[in-house]
Length: 69
Image (tube, rainbow, N blue to C red; front, side):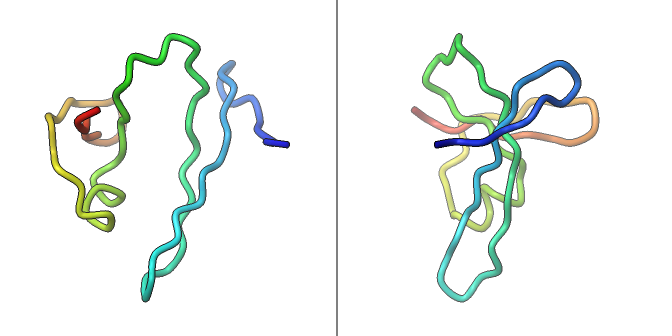
């Protein structure tokens, strides 16, 4: 069972990231039924996971990164 919450009228679920020798961190993701195959993450998550960068896009309160499919 996945438990989430409503935030600002949007359904969200927390995802916990765990890495060796790194502290766990959790991000809330909006459930998007129109998923297009891309994952958008904040720069801290991209850096910790050493993921390839596809592009950046400005957001209201932070800069987010769009990764390859």
